[in-house]
Length: 103
Image (tube, rainbow, N blue to C red):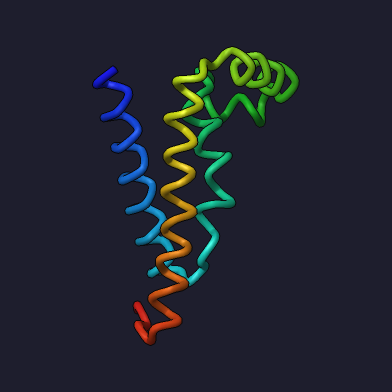
């Protein structure tokens, strides 16, 4: 139970920080929220990214099976990371609205 709470907080903070830094540097507020599903696929699948190009049929069917087999705990942890990216976009929008021009 403690590992779940720590994992939720960790994913939230990590993805909030990564999204915040990308938003500052690239000035694209919702870029990380759009890229997050790709990151989730990279976290969940057990195959090389190169396999998506060399044997796409096998790779996409494997990722479909793998996504259907994740547990509610995993979904909760991954959703906390997504919440971090969304909150980062909201914070950046608020900061820009209040006059802070990051980079």
